[in-house]
Image 1 (cartoon, rainbow, N blue to C red):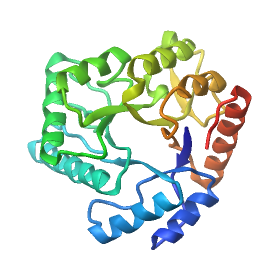
Image 2 (image 1 turned 90 degrees about the vertical axis):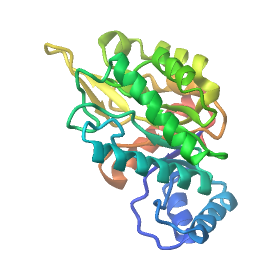
Image 3 (image 1 turned 45 degrees about the vertical axis):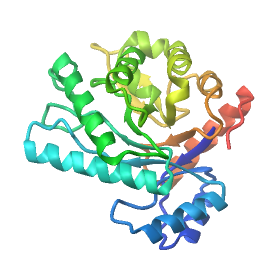
Length: 278
């Protein structure tokens, strides 16, 4: 696997970007450009990444294709198409979004989000994005989530079958699936099962940690790797069966110092497990 995360240094050219990635100690990176980049810029950054053996892990298309407001939904779908096109042009492993919500908060829970009607709407939206772009080097993926599809190994498999497109693949965030005490305490088996059943289609992963309080009712918090309950040596051992170039991307931390602490912990856990983490 390849460890990666966001870059906090400013850069204006591919060489400065690669230098910043290297200083952070990463072998994978978030796409440094947005959808407005012209072909020359895309080629320059893609070439610099290839020369430096840095994998461009993902292009974020963070938006709500399922918004009830028609104009907002159209804008979200257009953003997803443009970001998927960018991912294909630059050779990123995936373009990633969430499936979307029927509520006012684009990534928040809503009673309608886990209905069959919404499942069908997700299938339609993902098909339209992939069919319009027709990616050949990358894939469109949905990040696993606690309160919207895909919220489990089984629901991801259902989406793969229903969408039925080669351009659709898997983005794995284990912590986002820890939506109950059973999953929280059984997270190692959850990760093993997910990887066993979906591993060949996983394009990128997120690295986080989680804690659960002892107050009523169940409350889970996302925390920095190394400060939660996850058995990272066991999790990394399970992920080690994936394509060696699979990125493991740190996220949702506060500044470069926090990311450095997280990266140091994950590398130590990999060493303890005998897992090669670039």
